[in-house]
Image (cartoon, rainbow, N blue to C red; front, side, top):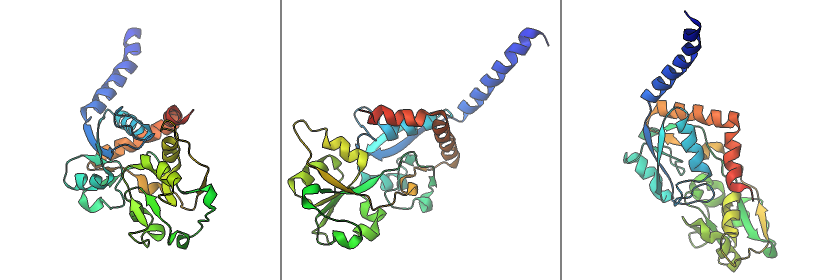
Length: 247
């Protein structure tokens, strides 16, 4: 073998590997929530969550086709085979419906918010009884110990989390359950609105299993997991977070 051939051989092998990987590439339609800055930005087809999933799939050649739906429609869209994957199951096990769970691309840090001026203490589920509580869709399924026992008059789930800071400030609700980054984003996104001082009651233990994507194809799930591991190892995962959260 001449020297030129020796030089070309590694490049040829790399190209062959890339072609082989691309041969199994697919366009993956995945249902996400219909706007949850900074994790999901529908108009920009971007956000922390969307970018991480897109780049993890792309690691082995797959292309993401994001579809944005209200949270309550995400599980039905998978069961009806309208999408190839969903970002999370909203508290409903998708395994009986042909779902393969992947590793969590993000973990939401959900806390209870109250106005500091109210001096409320939340340490146990009983502390919410009789309080007006607002949360996101699917929260009672995620945290039944805390929320399932609240009366319908006191508890509401709303798909539009952008109203949470304002309604808390106005006293429409005494308690709001939200992810820290989501709440902070909305608290400072409305021109002229100044969020009063709040207390954060961090009493819910984050469970990564609550935020796992579900795929219909086990091989694509495996490719996604490999891509996500690469994002963590390479530092790209942290860079995506910093892009959206650094002031």
